[in-house]
Length: 80
Image (cartoon, rainbow, N blue to C red; front, side, top):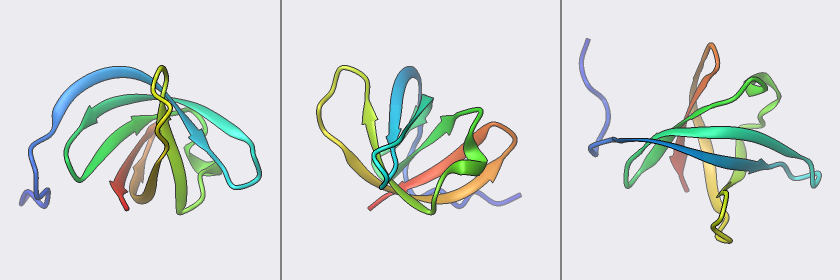
């Protein structure tokens, strides 16, 4: 299997919140991160739209994201 990532991922385990356009929120865990995206873990991955805002707990900045892939409880996102 060839590696398609363009940047190195760093493992992490931080709480994060996915902000949906309706004002609704989904709790998740940030499992690894790179300069171009991240891997999230959430029980509600099927509810995620293709684009959303991601905010780390304790950080006020919301980062726009696009879903790159979904598998089991994991979601790969690309930062926009």
